[in-house]
Length: 195
Image 1 (cartoon, rainbow, N blue to C red):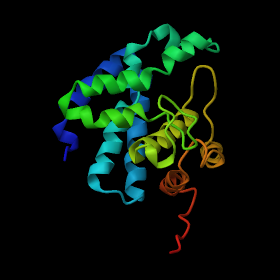
Image 2 (image 1 turned 120 degrees about the vertical axis):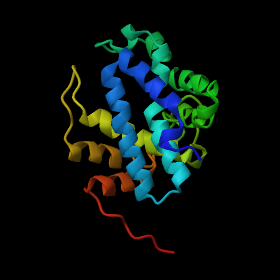
Image 3 (image 1 turned 135 degrees about the vertical axis):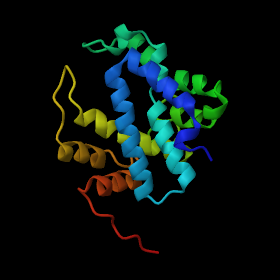
Image 4 (image 1 turned 90 degrees about the horizontal axis):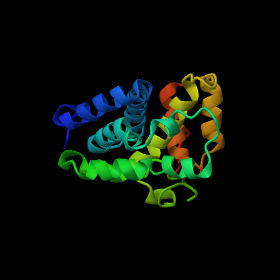
């Protein structure tokens, strides 16, 4: 199993992202912290927890291949620009496949914008077809995006962001992951599971 110390390539890629977009690099690290903690709350095995952490750190690495004018556009993107932006999971996966120590993370990165109901991208995966790591990263990514301030909007309060996650459970997000996320940040209790 790869551990945090075993993958120096991660540090190199994060360093590149930090030069390219320091705010995004901070988002990746925060998302990774959330993802690792949620996977722990869900009592997943240590390899899956580590894959969540590494996958979250690298989930937007494909943005390195997208023109900054699109990434930083303050207006609504036109369809052609949106198509370019939505290529970033595939670009990231393609990059990671070329790095032997990180090739196993490529499917996680590719799937982090899939949705439980099959309306996500790039492969329209449904439910458990989406790797559990990608389902966890999707929730962590969305929560941190909503609660961090941006130039064009205020940060949402924790309760508002959590309500958004709950409201989109079983359509965009995995309900079990959302529940675990709420437990992790201390705003929900885990519901009892009956046999």
